[in-house]
Picture 1 (cartoon, rainbow, N blue to C red):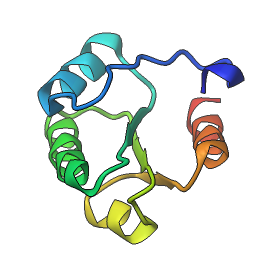
Picture 2 (cartoon, helix red, strand yellow):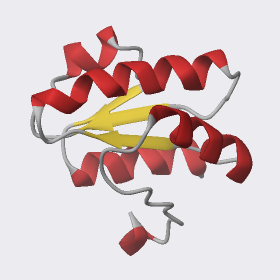
Picture 3 (cartoon, helix red, strand yellow):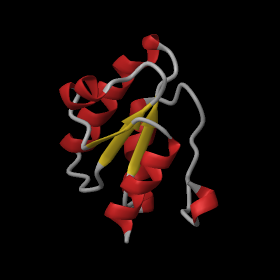
Length: 97
């Protein structure tokens, strides 16, 4: 994303959902991206998305990662599914431009 001139706030891995929500509020972000590379981490995505929506954050959430499919992304309430890095840039282009 940074290669395409987007400012990225990387909170790292295994981040508490509350920290993601709090950072989104504090930084007034335009888009929130979540990635999961292991099936054990996708449950946190659902909790994170719920916290974001419950907090009234208007920034859309996109998800992706090796273990996700579009149907699961829809099931957990994500606004977008990025199957790869290029599609993630396209999502950002459509939301942030």
